[in-house]
Amino acid sequence: MVLAHEGVCREQRAGADHLRVAGRDVERVDLLVLVLGGVYLGASTLIRLFVTSGPIADFGLPVLAIVLAAVFVLLAQDPVAPEPPK
Image 1 (spheres, rainbow, N blue to C red):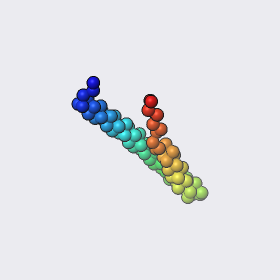
Image 2 (tube, one colour):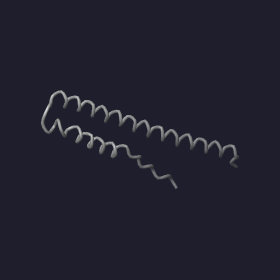
Image 3 (cartoon, helix red, strand yellow):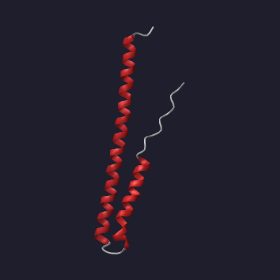
Image 4 (tube, one colour):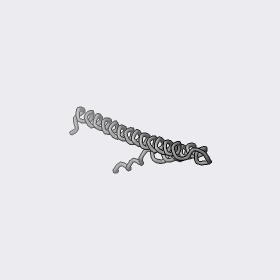
């Protein structure tokens, strides 16, 4: 026999697990943003210091920004949730 109190506890645990998983996803996306931002900052610094003119100086940073945005879109997707057991 399952008491009503036990059912509430299970639902509360399920909600807490959902929040924990959502928190991990946010942490993962935040870390990805920091890493990609650091890559952009480092590459832009190197381009500005060592390549002062030419097509790399003109088009390098916009191309890098587009590539990093595409990487973010691909890597920041929600992971596929496993199918619950039947």
